[in-house]
Structures are given as C-alpha cells and as structure tokens.
Length: 415
Image 1 (cartoon, rainbow, N blue to C red):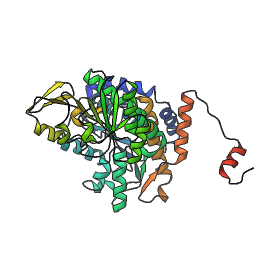
Image 2 (cartoon, rainbow, N blue to C red; image 1 turned 90 degrees about the horizontal axis):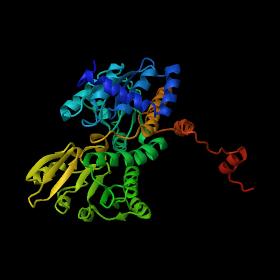
Image 3 (tube, one colour; image 1 turned 90 degrees about the vertical axis):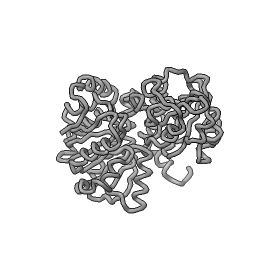
Image 4 (cartoon, rainbow, N blue to C red; image 1 turned 60 degrees about the vertical axis):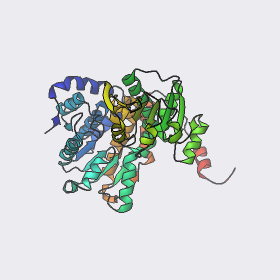
C-alpha cells in the first residue's frame, strides 16, 4: 500500500504529470510500443529516482508495459508530495514523503523493495546497496537493473571489482542520450534556475566557482558564462582542467578559488570538496550549493560547528554567521540544489534519460538468459533509437551514409 504525505494533494500533482507528458515525445513513442507488446507482463519493477513529475511519467510508462511498478525517491528533499499522491492515485505503488529523516528515507526504500523486484531503476545506488545488505532476502527474483547517475556507476563498478554486485546492471548514465543531454544541458539549466529562483540574485558580474569539469560541470560552467559570470573551475584531472582552460575558464585549486568566489557549485561526485579551511577565507555572503548526487561535497556539518549563529534567511537558504561576522549561505542543506531548491531537469531532457531507462530494462528482459553479474554499457542500438525519436519529434532531419560511404569507412583500402 502506498505511503504518501497527503492523498488530497493528488490533483495538483496530476496537472504536473500531464504537463511534462506533453513534452516527453520519445517516452511517448516507447509507451505506445510497450502498451502493445507488454514486455514487462508479470514483472515487478522497483524505481528509486527523484520523485517528481518526470519520474512519475516513467513509472506510468513501465506500468503500461505490463509491469507492477513500485516507486520511491532517491533523496529526502527532492520528493514532491503532490506528485507522489497523484502517481499513487494513478495506480503506481508509491513510497515517498518530502523532508523525512535519513532513517525514515531508508525505511521507504525498504518498503519499496519488499515487493521482491525483478528489475530495479536506481539513482545513486541506494537500492543496490540495500539489496546487497539489509534487504538481501528481497533480491531472490532479480533479473537486473539500471543506474541513472555517475556516483551510482562508480559504486557499481567498485562492487563488481569486489565481487559483491547483486545483479547485472546497465550503466545508463554513460549512454550518449543521457550524459550528453541530461548531465550537460539538464544540469546546466536546472542548477541556475534553482539558484536564481531561491536567491533572487543576479549572476552577471559575479565570480562563480565550479568544482569539477565532467559533463555536469561543463554544463553548469557554460550557463554561468552565458549569463555574464566570471567562471573559475577547480579540478583534479589534468585533461579536464586543460579542457576547461580551452573553453575559456580560469583554473586554480579550491584553496585559492575559495578567496574569490561569490557563488560555489560542487559537481564532483566526491566528498569534502569544500571544507573548513575554505570557509575560513571566503567572502561575506557567498552562496554555497551542491549539484552532485550526495550531500557530502560541501561540509555543512563542519560549517555549522564553526558558526556562532545560524538562521533560515529565505526558503531553502540557511545563513551561517562566523565569529568574525561573515555569513556563508548554504542552499538546500547542501543537497542536490536543482531538486532540493527547484523542479529538476527540464522535461525534454528527462525524456531522453528515461527513454534510456525504459529501453535498457526491456533489453535486460530480452537477454536475461545470457546475462552475467557485471556492469553493462547501454548498446548503441538503444542510443540510436532514442536519437531518432527525438529528431522526429523536433522535426529535424540528418544525412544518411550511402552503401559506398559505409564501405569506405569500414574498410582499409584507399580507392
């Protein structure tokens, strides 16, 4: 039985779901295919992704494919209570409440997994972590699953190396349809939408420090530059640092960048990126936020210990006053800012990411007899199919190789 905050919120959530469905054409095409073929008939799918309207649409599409879907969030602050109520009312078992404690959040994940899923969709690795530990008894029917984000894939590959991966997994984040669009353009836009809506401050003229220059960092830096910010990038990878330099950004260590930034955005997937020694040299009234999956990139706990006073200055902004009178402002408790303080990625972007999820789950079912317990890359055929859906929806056309061109590219002889 679904667990949501308030079932009476469903009408508002339903409107949100109906809106995004109008802008997710690739997933709509897949839904038509699934509704006809019923590839998940008799299967249970557990989904742990940020519980908002686009995710609800994915759950509904999987249900149209014959699955019994069990939906939960992947972050205590990103669940939208009205959407959770609506998708539960629409027939998807839903376990999600915004703002729960860490223990309550895990309990909701456990209730989701109690269905003994055949397939899982994970975002950050929480479901797989439980299926490999506390919830091992719920893994007895597993065929496989998909992982949505960079952090989760790093953990999956670590499990694979140590021989403790509970089932075959698809590295959805590494698909072209995911990281080129979701990570770069989705993160780039949604991070700044959330920051601007939350702070009501201008970006132009400010110095923005972006920690990490992967696909998410690229998008976040690009949008900041486009809005007139002076952008500094911090990195640990020499080639990503060189890439950022070629893109026109300054490069320096965080120890130095901490002195200059007005707005800091961490996008690394690592921990302890901004720590006390950085807080000590920052300007008064800086904005600190995180766009990596987990809330460990900005050491908010240490900042709280350093502060002589803390107060909620605006919704989703806590100011920490230091002994010398400076105030450092943290957005969304250091959690994923575009969802803790905003609506997440645009619908058109998540259309592609969730299309990868849906088709990857289908692929797992089709190949279940031959799978081994490892992390699989998403086949190019899936990426290409999604690309064609998206091009058609945007009324775009591209060239096609002739037979002679294909032979030329695949051969070694020079005519």
